Length: 283
Image (tube, rainbow, N blue to C red; front, side, top):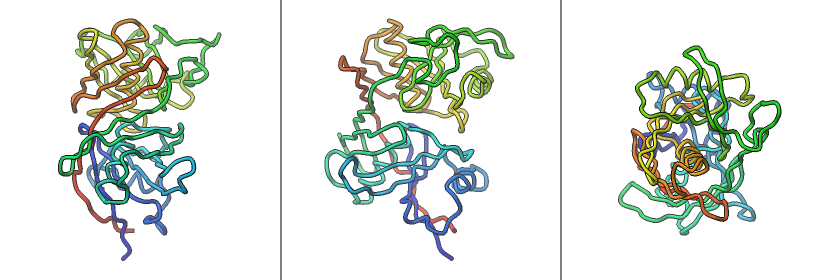
């Protein structure tokens, strides 16, 4: 029986199954593969697939397709792509200090900062945030140059959110504590009609000018222990709303992601990925 070799990495508990697309020839479609492999009861279990393909090096060195557990595709995943890049270094497929990775939301640049056993720490330059409602995308009339404190009525009550696109659409709700049923709010807001591509939802509590706490609801995955894009959006919006500076430590249940929103508008996130195990999946 043919098998698909894969690695499972996690970034602060946000775990991804990583493999090379060429190894999946003859397999089901990527959405079908994600639904079966990501199942935590009958599959390998993960928050998504990170599927790599080597490129010719003119624009990027590799491409990475992120597939959610429900079979939908994500434009980007901060932790998912970091897991993919860690897989390349761990396997010896890539040894240079930096790597250019093509995603659905553009080319991201990863720099290896440190390796300790099967744990890899990277800086990732992921581009500039997009604030206009049509770029998130978010259906509002009239269009907004920036989506700030936008009201929304959900089953649990009336809330306000701010939003940004940092490779994926993210809606952020700021709060003093996480005592309310944020999972239900995230579940509803993810699929709200005003978000034509659905949205990630991050709940943010500001500690001080340099530290924030978050809880995460990811589109297509649900609650996760960490998320690079949600951490990034939370930091950028905290700074945009003058709640913090431009360098923010984002604390999630899985760990801490460092985000810098530079003066040139580029975002750099720093985080780690660790190997959980390697295996083979029957095709």
